[in-house]
Length: 326
Image (cartoon, rainbow, N blue to C red; front, side, top):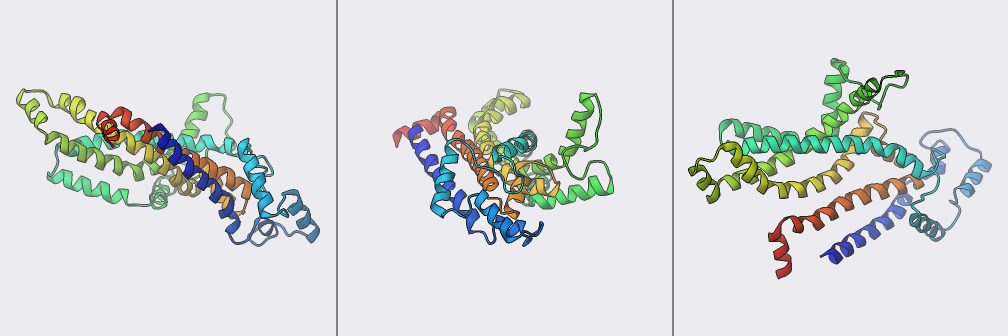
């Protein structure tokens, strides 16, 4: 089982590493054209262009660049960013905590709220209130991240002025109190976190609702009701326990999709995570920075999917038994 998972995800990872090198070079334009003013930036003389091409090794053949790329991967070094003039690894490590912060909090909130709403909706399924609530959750789940974020931005930042519009902190905040600094970071992260939570909560809700309906229709739940077992005990000891395994798998997958959704959310709120950084790297044709960011996104998504494939059979004996029979 472990060998099969490692082989599958290892093969996918190798393919992604190849795409990581070739796709940026298939884009129209290049880093020198960007710096020369095709997209933006100052005008460069021919001598300056030639100097930059030589400095960034862009005059080398595609094969030589690919060998340098593979050599850097072995040491997790992606070179220097064309636009930031700093090592790519340092840039990514400086921006990664912001994305981990909003993705981690939004994943936790969406799971908690999705489980609670799903349990309630499944217990009172097919009633008028449940149908309306389910349709509302399905409609909200179909909305794209940038639309939800735009609505929240207009309501809470523009009209109400309750939360900051952009950034991760006040640039000129001076305070000796840690609570003031933490509160400032929390306020700036609130809208990105709420946006990611809203767009991801419906999948957890629908899964828990369906699992709850299936479990409460089973004979052992009917027998437990006849014995007079209280509703809370039924929900938490029987229904929730049976729904936790699918929730675990969904959580692993949702973390990966939230990282991709963070690209739109961070761009909208100018939040300095790796999602916004990737957008800037693509626009500036910054090959080394794109290599590093694509590598991080690919590694995170594959890691959580591999964990789901590896741990699920260990948590559910039925799946493990099925694999042995095969």
